[in-house]
Image 1 (cartoon, rainbow, N blue to C red):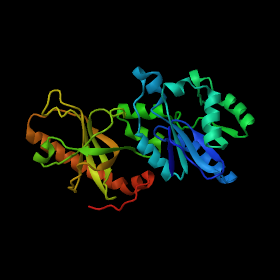
Image 2: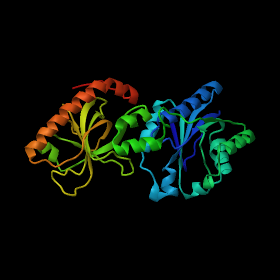
Image 3: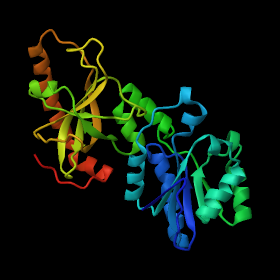
Image 4: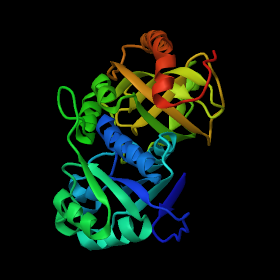
Length: 326
């Protein structure tokens, strides 16, 4: 898959593109309908399967004080688009210059000149261009002028609209089941493992500390059952702690610590991917260290049981290619 960013010059094989346009944070089930329609049109017209996405999220430029947390990193978004079979992703940097660009100028520069669009697929509430003046109607008018069709996909959802906002709300409240319903798969994080204070190892529960980007939306502090995909492609059940470790610190840094169950691997400097399955409990301070250790053993046993019960299904949903190994 070709990834084309601002400032890069790309010489594409002659031909036209069926283009899905949107931020696509999370690539939830509503997004997947838009993307599937673009792929279908590409097949019908013998065109490239292309996506235009934006980074950072527009709100981080337009309303930085109210910008939402992100569901996934750009790298995760790109990896999933590649698994979905897209040929080209045009990553448009959303900065002050783009915010000032008119809708017509954006269409001509990106959709017409760069991608030679034959089909453009968007959500039916799509807005773009300076002051959000561009709409589906104006995009259709541009299509008539530049020889491309526009498909506006109606809002999708069961029991409420599938949206990135809905995913963020579910994650923020700790309702990972609802988040997974909207996403069509469990919430995943991917981050580099960094050194910690090795307290978990001292307690008999070594952890991989994730250097999670600050802009990612997080669930409430607590302990979570999960699955981890290791750099070698194998998997492990995981117990994931999110929070400040009140047993040891009154106001410590917020950490994301992943205990790989039945596996011990040196992962410092490696990229680890984890899927969060369910919240087991909140963080708390125990009366004694022995009480904490007893609870950690129970958390580990519960996490192992929950993770192994859904390992094969989760792998299929995420597109992970690995064999389960204990």
